[in-house]
Image (cartoon, rainbow, N blue to C red; front, side, top):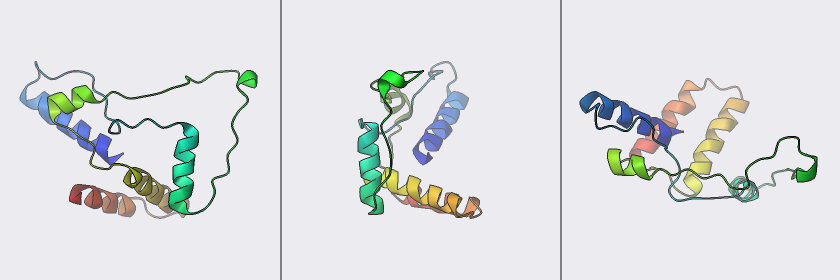
Length: 123
C-alpha cells in the first residue's frame, strides 16, 4: 500500500509540474512479481510460521470465473516518474501482515500506519 501511495504522490507532483506530458493512467505494482493465490498463501504461512487454512474453489461450480492470471505492468510509472517499489519480496507480505494484525487487534490504526510509513521511507 505504501508503494502505491508514494506512486500517487509522485504522480500528483508530476501533474502539477508538467500536466501536458504526464500520463493520465498509471499502474503501481510489485517489481516483476507474479504469484498464484496458493503461492501467496504459502508465503504468508511461512512468514507467520503457521498454516493458513484455505480451500480452492471448484471452478466448475463457480458462478463467476476469475481470470487464470492477473498481473500489473508498472513500466510506465517507472519510466515517467522514476517510481519503483521500495518493498520487495517478503517485506511486502511482512508489512501487510503487521497492518492487518494490528487492525484485527483493534489498535488505533494511525499508529501502525505511521510506523509502516517510517519503515518504508527508511528502506
